[in-house]
Image 1 (cartoon, rainbow, N blue to C red):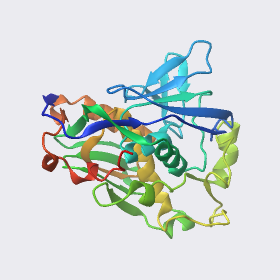
Image 2 (image 1 turned 120 degrees about the vertical axis):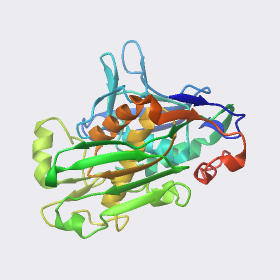
Image 3 (image 1 turned 45 degrees about the vertical axis):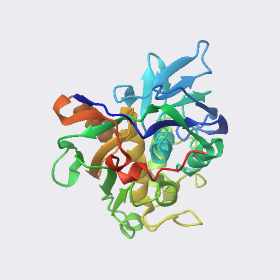
Image 4 (image 1 turned 90 degrees about the horizontal axis):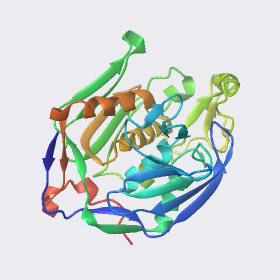
Length: 315
C-alpha cells in the first residue's frame, strides 16, 4: 500500500439534512425505521443500531462483513445489520462518503427491492460538499478470486483503470432470465446510476421461497419488492423495468458490496456469476496485497476521472 497525496479538488460529500424511511426487512419481515444523517469528514458510512439498550455503531469495512448468505451483513460484537447492499449501492452511485444510518432493527428495509427509493431519499436530503479531500483506492495490479470448476465456475476481478466501471455476466439456465440480456457493462463516466442501474430489483424463484422461509429468509418478500419467477416466466404483472434487469441488479449489488471497502474505487470490476460472498472475498484479497493498491487524491481537475465529475451535483 502506498500513499499518494496532492492538493485536492474533489471534496468529500455528505447529506445537507437528515431523511427518514419506514419499511420491512426482505428476510426478517420486521418493520424497521431508517434515519440517514449527515456525518463529519472522514467518518465514512456508519450504521447505528439505535434499538439496542446501548446503541452500537458498525462502520462499514470489508472485514466487518460477517455473513453473505443471500445478502451482505456487517457486525460489531453481537450487533449486526443485514441486507445493506442496496443502500450502499445508492451511496456509491451518488458519491456519498460520510453518512450515519440509524436503524431500529437488524435489517435495512427492502422498500421496492431496488436502490431507487434510497436514491430518492438521499437526493431529497441534498448533497453537501465538505472541506476535506475525497480519497480513493486506486487498484495498481489485477486481483482475482474464483470458486468452483467447469459449469460451477464463478469469478470476480479488479484491474487498474482510470475511473470506475463494472461488467457482469449471469448464467441462470432459466427461460425468463435467458430471454433477457446476460451481460452488461456500466461505466460511471458514460452512464447515469439513477437512470441505468438504480431501478433494477432483486429477484427470486417460487421453488426457492418455501425453503428460504423455512430457514427464516424472504419473510418480507413479495411481488411488490422483488421480481418473482416460476419455472417458466416472470409473475409480476408489470413485467421488467429494463430489458436486462436481472444482470443490472447484479451490477447494483456489486456496487454496494464493493463500496464496503470504505472508499470509492479507481478500478475496472468484472465478474461471472459472482455474488455477495465472492465480492467480499475479492475486497479482502485486494487489501491483503499492499502492492496492488494505493490511496489517491487529485491535485488538478484534469487529473481526476470524468466519472467522478459526473456525480449528482451538491445543492
